[in-house]
Amino acid sequence: MKRHSKKNRQPLIFRIYKYIAIIIIALLVINYIYSNTSLFYNRRIILPFSFHLSKSKLYLLVGEEYRLFAFGDKERVEFASTNFNIAEVNFAGIVKAYRPGKTYIIAKSGDKQFRCLVHVIDINKKKLTLSVGKSYRLKVRGIIAPVSYKSSDKRVAAVNMFGRVKAKGKGRATIYAKVKGKVLRTEIVVN
Image 1 (cartoon, rainbow, N blue to C red):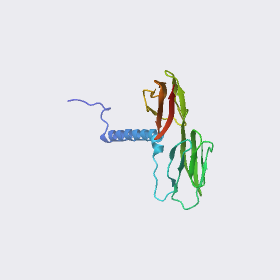
Image 2 (image 1 turned 60 degrees about the vertical axis):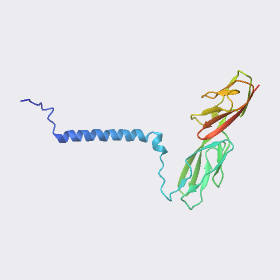
Image 3 (image 1 turned 180 degrees about the vertical axis):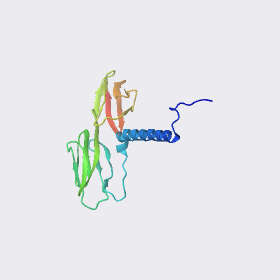
């Protein structure tokens, strides 16, 4: 007959409590990690008839306009920009982009307030003249995000994934930079 030591003779209920405690601690750790990530803050639950804005994030090119709508409140809504050098907003909620950077548009109605993050995007060169064999680096300003570059004519000017344009042959080409659904253009002339 085999003898069991007293250490291994825990009642079943204590082992169940131990596993439940481990699961609860794991869930608390996962909840803490999740709540401190951007995934937690990107989820917006909008109740019907509650005061909210049509967008919480907005990407604009320099010179572009967009109208923000405030829903769910019959009181007058006041709009303001935290940095009017980058983008300003008028009384009707029309946002106009001026310079690359980011700013917040704040909508106030009574004691309620909501914000919309506005990123204004631009490229460092609109027109560029290069000699054959020379290169230049294009940069998207106003946002830190992945950018995809494409050339309209690779025989005239080729571009790599970092925005480095290399002049290949004489002619004209357009370099397209796409970021967050916006397309920026640079006209290239190679002599």
